[in-house]
Length: 313
Ligand SMILES: NC(=O)c1ccc[n+]([C@@H]2O[C@H](COP(=O)([O-])OP(=O)(O)OC[C@H]3O[C@@H](n4cnc5c(N)ncnc54)[C@H](OP(=O)(O)O)[C@@H]3O)[C@@H](O)[C@H]2O)c1
Image 1: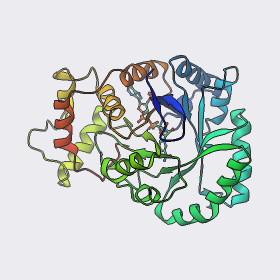
Image 2: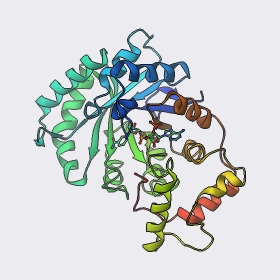
Image 3: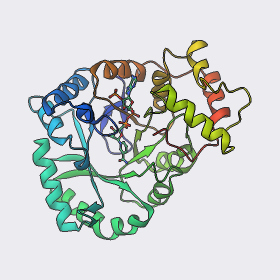
Image 4: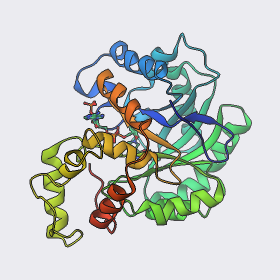
């Protein structure tokens, strides 16, 4: 597995991170048990994955804890998150500490490497800065977390309003950003700034639904054409990205999608979320497979380069 530097954190991590949320939640979403999900975690580590991203909200911290229970910890980077909203209102700093302690117990860990505020919306951002960040700085002094992170609510904020503001603050060591070949708008709005400031980046939504299910891609392309965000000329409405495989650029659309993100300047880690060991193994190969050809990247840019309104969800 290729390794990368996570911004200026000093952490050297795998280029593919295991995403324990998304639609699959390590397979818990389609009936896997914690023990079965833990098998996916262990297989990821065997494949060289050293960064694992989970969250209080996903219900996968216990499976991660089980998966890593007997593994050496020194090479693992554990990331988890807490949402601002808690029990129907904004959670307090004191509650955040209790929630962090509970995450640590579920993970069976003494420290969370990257503790992230989860899916922050624009109207929550000031509360994060004023109430929650001071608490997170205390957790860091206490040795319970190592770095502060923030993740955007990409579905509600596909144009990156929150991270565009957050990059101006100095408190975030790591940001999780939505970026994929269908919506590359983070390139100029987020990644240009994280690169100059040394903020580490975790990429979510590399594949999601639209790039793993042909019917979802057809619907999304039709919607973008109808809204004038992409040009119908030269686009096959039945198979909008089929040319990537037909012309030999990649073996599959998910492979192309992961490779596209992996080689984007400014993306450190590409998260892959799956409950399938087979998909995990394929995705690890994709991440290590090298960049798409410059011609394919340029053609994707001509089709989707202006899109900032969809996520592929
Ligand atoms: N705001 C936030 O903080 C936020 C929001 C969303 C996600 N995240 C994080 O980002 C991570 C990545 O997002 P994501 O989970 O949506 O991941 P993703 O890698 O973009 O997409 C994963 C989806 O694609 C499918 N898939 C994966 N590999 C495949 C393959 N080789 N062939 C066909 N289908 C494949 C998976 O289903 P199978 O299970 O069938 O493989 C899964 O449903 C999450 O797990 C989570 O950790 C954070």
